[in-house]
Image (cartoon, rainbow, N blue to C red; front, side):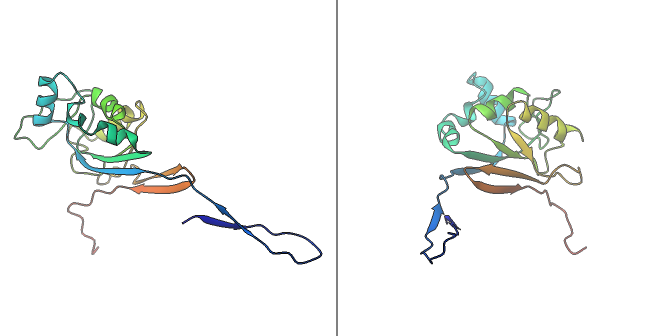
Amino acid sequence: APAIVVERIASSTPEIIEPVIEKNEPLSLIFTGDIMLARHVDFLSKKNKDEAYPFLKIKDFLAAADLTVGNLEGPIVKNYFTVPNNSTHFSFAPSKAEVLAQVGFDYLSQANNHTNDVAYASELETKKYLAQNNIIGFGQNRNSGQDKATKIEKNNYKINLFGLYTFGTDFNR
């Protein structure tokens, strides 16, 4: 809803006070689910000689939004490894951060069970590669101490993105 600002008019005779309506520019948001860039997805990207292969049919859609947010389902690390199809431990090459930026991602949650699959420091290393490509990594993985939330101000809107990994958490404590 548009914000209403009332201007006070100082005068000796009462006048009608007309509200001034501030209109915000529209803001388009896209939220995706898990982004898996390992296993068979990585195989297909290499086979097609295109690291953006998983996004070919949706990259224009993703890039058209004012803000595109996803969940990065693994770490981006210098010492990444090829992940076998039956593995549940993931790692992505540093070049994947550039691909994610090129296809339109602005914010990526790291609040999931795969963020530290390579090492405990994987979360910070991933944030570094994302930041080098103008993507903000947010969300807390277990007890890493990293920021759970990130604040966004765009087109006169204020948005908080909150990411928290809660698997195995006892909320009754």
